Structure formats: structure tokens, C-alpha cells
Image (cartoon, rainbow over all chains, first blue to last red; front, side, top):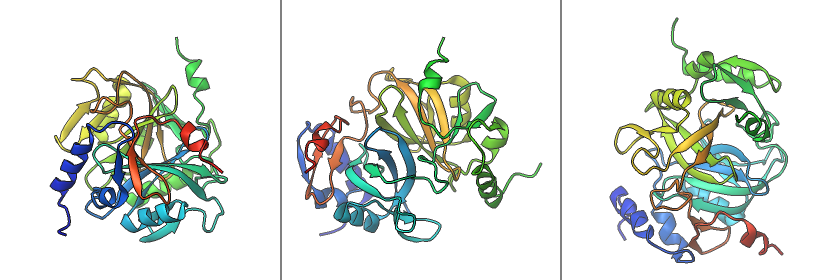
Length: 155
Length: 155
């Protein structure tokens, strides 16, 4: 079989748009049509499955995604080290995969995980600890992803 | 002033790692050091501020981010149309920005928003409606981001 072109891949995801909840798709068919970028990578949002906190954004290539799905442990492609990266293999801060989701145009992933310890190399729970708001002229370090403080600022 | 190199930008985010919660950073200083990619873009995770659902992944350039922060309405850079894209400007499905977060290495953003209607062009709440799990051989259309069904599958 000839490998699908990007145009084929777009058409494939377009064809899924009208499908109802519960419609089943063979995994091999789906994976072959994922739209990795020109470097063979796709962005992955990693979210804490227990409380919904967004933990990090990283990248997978086809091999990393296949290994993630087979092993149930988040495996990324490290752009700086140019190789597969099993999350937590040195730190112990592993991510057990609950589910993997693909977006409507097939070029981004959302993985919901059980996070052991901290997702961030700084030992913070989430990598997204620099925070600002509209119309602010400064940003703050804020390791908490709670929205309580924001909600209380509402008029 | 000479524009910072990528190496300068990495060093800048490294220097923030040890800062404690509450440490304040001038916004202009921070924005100048964001690490947009070779196309001048950075990925943005958009999350529902009310319930934590991840709604979509899209991209900003510097101008889109500046406009987002000034207007308080999510404004992306559309790669397909090659121009700024005020979310909801035609559909009415706007995203009011609650906060904007930057990750530890300064190359990804998390925006928490009040979503009007559906984030996805398919009228689904979230773009991430194709779902699979480790060791599965199929994927399903699943417009709900609830984890209830998954939790009940645990042994």
C-alpha cells in the first residue's frame, strides 16, 4: 500500500468529523494517518487524569507514540537529546497513561496520565509555572494551577 | 539593545527556575525571551478555566500573543490561512482569557479561558474527540472528556 499523503490524511480526519460517539476505528488505520510535522513530530499535551492539571507539553515521533501505547508509560521524543525519552526513567517521575486523544485535524495529541511525583524537571508539579493575565504589565512565578485566586479577582 | 539569541533565551528561563512563588517579572522582559520556533510560532494549549477540559491546541506568533494579552480574547495565528485568527470572530465561539502561562523552557503556552459554546469547528466542546487507550487495537469517537468510564474499567 502506498503511504498516504498529507492531503489524504486531512481528508481522513475530515471524514471522521460526522461520526457519532462510540464509532470505532481500527488503530493501525488511524495511526498511519496522524499528521506528524516536517521533522516527524507531533505535540503532546500531558494532563493529570486525577485533577485535570496540564502538566507539560512535549513531542512524540511515531516510534515514541507506538511505544507509549504498547507500554502504557509516556514515552516522548527528546528534541534536545534527539532520542526516545521514557518519562521518569531517571527521575522516577513516571506517567502511567490513562488515555490518548487525537485532535480534529490529526496533528496534536492529548494524553491523560497518572503522574508520579513532579512532571517538571524543577520538581514543580507542572511545567507551566510562569503566569500572567490580560492587561497586566508583569508575570509571576506561580506553581499552583488553582483558579481560586483568579476567581476572587472577578468584579 | 541587541535581540536575545536562543541561547540567551534558554539561559533566561533557566535563571527563573529557582524563583519562588510570587516573584514578579516585567512582562516586556519575559515576552522578548519567548522561544518561538523557526516559523515564529509557539504552541498554545487552551483549557476551559471552569472545568479543566483541554479544548484545543493551536499556535501564536508574537503579534497574536500580544493581541491576546491586550484584548483578553484568544487570538491565534492560523497556519492554514497564514494570518491572525480571533477565535470566534465568525462563529461567536469566543474564548475570554483568564490567564496565560509559559512553560519552564519558554517555548509553549497554556491559556485558560471562558469558552463560549464549542471550541471545535465540528461543534464539539473539545477538538480531542478521537480516543484510544494503551494496548487497545481500536480508537473511538468520544466527545466527552469525562474520566468516569475509564475509572470504572480499573481492576
